[in-house]
Structures are given as C-alpha cells and as structure tokens.
Image 1 (cartoon, helix red, strand yellow):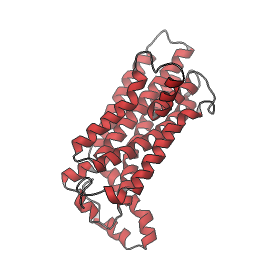
Image 2 (cartoon, rainbow, N blue to C red; image 1 turned 180 degrees about the vertical axis):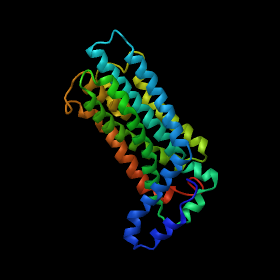
Image 3 (tube, rainbow, N blue to C red; image 1 turned 30 degrees about the vertical axis):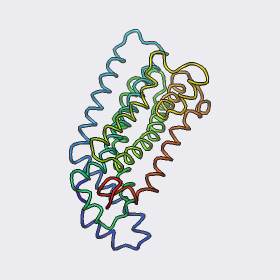
Image 4 (spheres, rainbow, N blue to C red; image 1 turned 90 degrees about the vertical axis):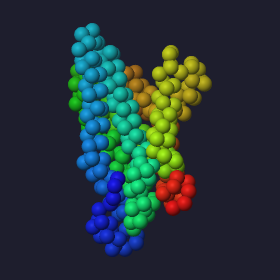
Length: 278
C-alpha cells in the first residue's frame, strides 16, 4: 500500500479515541484493498487462478469413464486446488504487506499517520483476505459444473468456504508476522514459500503419511493437510460433518494463535527496520 488517503485519515482522527481505534483498521483495509485490486496485482493473480481451475475442470469433465464415486473425487480435487491456490496467493500478498512497503519506502508515511500499528496489521489482514474471497467466488461455477450430477455442490461450497477461510486467516496472519520480522521482502517471500511447502509436502508423499497413530498425529497437526483431509472425508467418503472435527483443530489453532500473536505484538514488530528501531 503506497499511502493512505489523507482525507480519510484526517476524518478518522477527528473522531473520539475509542471510536477511532475501532474504525482505523477499516480505513487501512479499504486502502489496502484498493491498492491490491486497482494496481492490477489482484486481477492478475485471480486470472492465473481461474486458468488453473479451468484446466482441471476441463480434464475432469471430459473424462468419459467417470462414475458416481469418481465424480465426487473430481469435485474434491477441484475444491482442494481452489483452497490450496487461494490460500497460497493470500499468503503471498500478506508476506509482501509490511516488508514490501518497508523496501519501497512507503511504510514511514503510513506509520506517521494517526493510526495504531494494531489497526495497520488488522487492516492489512482484511485486505489480503479479499483475495481469498474473490478466489472462492471464481471457484463456485467450476465446483457447480463438476458436482451438479451428484447433488454435492452445496456441501462442497460450504466446506470450501469454511475450511478455506480458516486456513486463509491463519496463513495470512502468519505471512504478516513473517513480513514484519523479515529483514527484506525477498526473505519474507522465501520463508513464506518454505512454510507453505512444509504444510503441503507431507500430503504429497508417495503412499501418503505413515500408517498408524504416528501418521494420524502428523496429519492432524498439519493445518493445511488436516483441513483438506476433513473436506475429503465429508465429500468423498460420505462422513458426517461432526465425525472428523478433530481434523479442524489445527487449522483453527493456527488462525486464532497467529492472529492473536500478530495483534498483541503489532506495536513492537511493525517498524521501519525489522526488529529494530522505529
């Protein structure tokens, strides 16, 4: 985000202190969203996202040997891709949010505005999440095309919205923490990519995770893997919504813990020099 609109900040600053604290984050979120979508970054990422989903949807829809179970698996695969790529781009945007501004020399003007650092990080978090919700809207017709024959469209969309939003909040907050603490934007993006690979790699191992209690524990402590496992259990295996709730614990813990740490430490970590002086 380059600079906040002066008129909005001045208007916010004239309000009473409690009201200002509650409203400043919305000012930051509006400006962050404008910069994301009007700068072309958001539309470009969304276009790439739609191309990827189009390819997978086409391959699944043209499979002439598809049957009832395979169609459920196709919907689940498309949904998992939508969630994975959606939270990926959200993480990338949040990883650039503070370290990127620091390198572009625009963070100083933001810190000089009458906005608390907590409001800044909350506004940037909300701004980054607009990309996830836009990605989910793009994914809706693809899920509908693949799932309309087996009546699982509503279930798939509810799962995607719920699981994806929890993961997006957790990874966006984590990305902001990394961005605030990193010495450069390249370091922030590199660490964020590494974290994402660490979350996704275990589920891509040949043969999956080890069998038994050890593999079950590994699956449940990985927020991304466990969230996608819950989606598969409901969509493909027909489990009830409450049967595998244990797999949602780690995604929820990540979202709550990362967001709480980000907001509590915001006054200390949002600085002109990462971990240094203001």
